[in-house]
Length: 411
Image 1 (cartoon, helix red, strand yellow):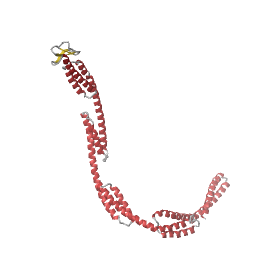
Image 2 (image 1 turned 120 degrees about the horizontal axis):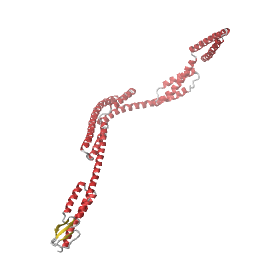
Image 3 (image 1 turned 30 degrees about the horizontal axis):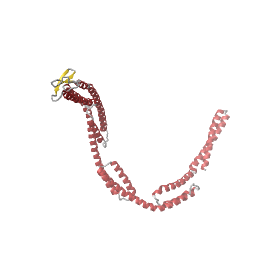
Image 4 (image 1 turned 180 degrees about the horizontal axis):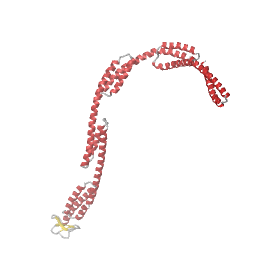
């Protein structure tokens, strides 16, 4: 076996021992007595290639971020130990250098992961604070229908979030839990009070049903309709009864109402048919009444109106849907007759006529007295007083003319 059998990274001695060259010198990696020096060198070179492939795989796993930094450090240390003491021929120093070059990569990844964890923690903290605020808002409100479901949804979201540092997480959880507990207690109290009110409402509505059923067959239409309106006001004021009985009670109450009002409507329809003929009579009378307008000769109009009014009353009731129309037309004629009568009275009121005559006499006497005073003032040479009296005289003469016109209206 030749001592010249060697490669760039190792050699085979004459005794078959295989050596590898490293930065610290040569060291024995084993022997391959069964084969030639070439086969021995190839055997240990293949071992190196297997190590190199393992290093390559580790590089890929670390640079891709598949391994966590701590796991990466452990894997690098394990493979490095294998390379340093490897029974293989090849660039073992190069493999060690490649493994050591992974250290800053791992540290960079560690820093990135730390920053990501911090960001996730901050996001989780902000989200939990939002959940706490939402829970406290629900707890302070009175949404008894949806609040419980909303709090369950908030709890599900809370469970999906990562834990924070213990102090922060515990403090937020206490607030969240307290809000849920407070809401649950208030909700239970609310529904307990509601149940009491609903039981009381049930008793009231059962009584109202009995009263309504007692009135259902009444034929005292007006009074009973008013009683049903009173019962309905009580029903609305009572509030809801327990759900399982509220609909049944309403059916009883509404059934009694329907029985009465259907009977009343049937009776009213029968009367309306009977009253239709009366309406035809009044249609004719109203035309005769309206023919009196405008009022001419008052006494003749009054006499005609009285006769037509007697026939109007004798004609009897009319269907309900005609009452307002016919009554309005009748009242219009009646009001016209009364207005004409009032006008005549105002124009012929003897007391007002006497007062007007008395006013004329007083004004004429006053005018005569002022005229005498004016003459006396002028005789005495007091022209100033005479002019002042003339102004008074002019005013009284104007009043006299007005009084005479008024007296003429009464005359």
